[in-house]
Image 1: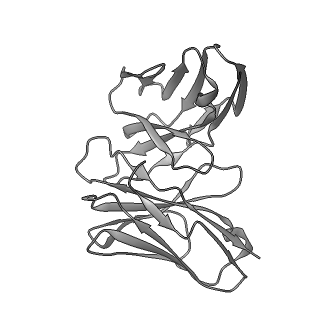
Image 2 (image 1 turned 90 degrees about the horizontal axis):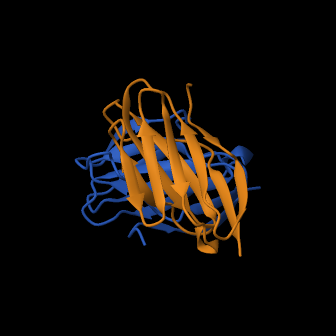
Length: 113
Length: 114
């Protein structure tokens, strides 16, 4: 993989459903993997900054895992709520000495009441 | 709120014109990056400034230029605008020494080129 790929592109779930998204990234020269939550007309909000293989991070109902050797990260949302509706972006930073984020195209989540 | 602000919110220009977009970084952050998000794509890295010097550049032509000021505010300038420059422009501030390089984004400036 040369770029950052996210799947699915979009997802429509019912309130209370649990869901997960995938981010695939190049496994060489890894420095960090970021997850952002982006609501329309607002700033992208950092959810997690992950740097170590095997990292697992949690914030409320949202959690993420990281596998740097195979180049993927999963984001999980447990018991989705309508306010979770947003675009979820992952971004990869290579170990090049400066802070360039390489973004995927995002997963757009819609949670219906 | 990230504490990063951008102005203007929206802007309409015509092809061939020049535009300046502004960003005010979070207090104490010494690094600012600019990204372009075209429709249907993820944000693309334009360039990064650290202590008023360009520190890295993405695949954008020289007509995209920037400045970072001592108070850590910054500008993105685009000359000779083209229709394909229509996009959302995001700035992100960060502290160079922070582990993992956490970045704080502004809400963006929507540029439309007619």
